[in-house]
Image (cartoon, rainbow, N blue to C red; front, side, top):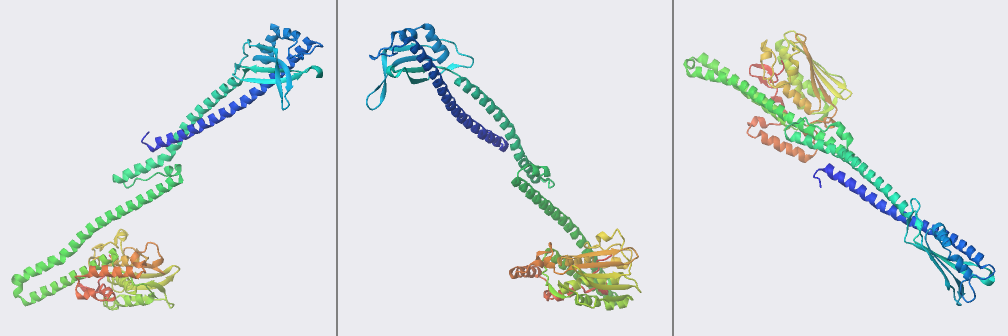
Length: 554
């Protein structure tokens, strides 16, 4: 037996067809043999009638007015002489009967219950067939015996005719049909081999391609897929298997790509964190060295260095809080408290946190709210954190005399928050990167170089947890517009993080336990309610008490 599925399937198809053809051939030949046998018997009966009629005619003519069989049971001598004529016998055997002929004269005698044939003592004549067969004829080992009554009422007699080993066309017809059936069988078997091989190949081609694709995936080629043509050529089950395999491969490739991107992003993130931490640590090391040396004896220099050191320490603490917040958001440890509240309240409260900073910088802060409530299911502190980040950036990047405008509007699928300014704007080349961690854009001015570069990354994470999107429109020197789109209900949006859509109490408790475990080791202030923690994310930068802890815009 072959080891391949295609070979075994081909052999199975051929074996089934061969067995079917053999059974059909045997059945057909058996039925044909019965049919030809019955036809042969009928033909012999016709021949027997012909021979019987001819013999009666010869006997009646030879006997004349005398009975053919006398009262004593003997056959008329004239009849015996006529029947013994060689030419007569050859004609009867070779021409009429075409078989060995046995002719027997006698009488029908009744014994009270039935009529029996009583042969005449001198009335039996045997003649063997001597003529050659016609084309297609052959002798058959069979015989037919029939009795025929003849003569007048006063001289009734019976002629018993037996035809044995006759010439028939039965064997030739069976042989011809057997040969024809054999040819048909061989042709059908050959055709079945071709068809079954083609069908088996059609069935197994998708399996081979599935195997090749699986081998490619196992070897690391994540782009290997089952071709569409293979899915169409196979059965529906194999096609469905191929579709599911491709879907699995797509998900696997996507997962591996995500892992690779996360790995690269984590590497870059660690490099950026190291860079960000190196600056304040280097400053602290310098201040400490100067205090140890001669500057420690100068009260004014010591006070200045201590004040600068306190600023750097605050910067380190500020950076650590941003990193912790962003890490929680990315890992899903933050469980949103979704409420069907009026969005205007959260936006207005967050925007007015920057009134003092805007006034000090000479920037007009305008909050434009609609008269009608804008109700969506959202987490007010988190949305306030997003707005606070955007407004803080807008105030910081807008020169004196500029304007920062905050607008809220209802949309067909939810709500929209726009934060626009008349500030320095963002270069087109920098727009794709502004939501990346630690990206602060060009360092052409002090505003661009300040901040941690995490505020917009945090804002984007919060918006995406709400099932929304954040976009930016800007140009160098033309100001910027940040647009936040929020759905009516984040739980109804496909792709929204599970932490948002989870409504089961046990799941929520699980998230809380994870968050508590992650927060273990923080100081007492970080264990305050989440609303307070959200507010902490908008605390002032150590470099400028009026600047919020959201500086990640350009």
